[in-house]
Amino acid sequence: MGSKGPAKPVFASPTVLETTVAGSVIEGLVTRHSFPDDVAKAQAAVRKEEHQKRMKGLRKELEHIDKTAWQFEPVDKLLGQNQ
Image (cartoon, rainbow, N blue to C red; front, side):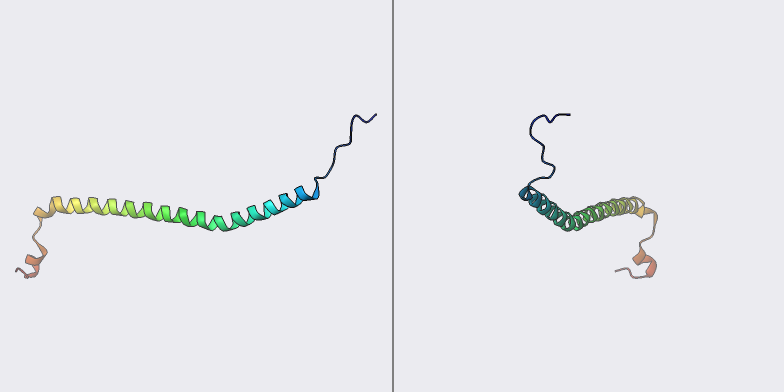
C-alpha cells in the first residue's frame, strides 16, 4: 500500500469556505426576499386572468341581452316613466 503522489487536501482553504458560506447566505437572503415578489407576481397574473374571464362573460351576457331586447317591453314604459 504505497502512496502515489501528494496527498489530496480534505478541506478547502478558508477563503474558499468563507466565499461559499457568504454566497449561500446571500442566496438565502435573495431567495427569502424574492419569494414574496414571485408570489405577488403570480397572484397579480391570476387576478388579471380572472378579471379577463369575468369581462368575457359579461360581454357575452350583454350581447345576449342586446339580441333579445326586442322581446321585452322597456323598463321605463313598464314603470310609467316614459319621457
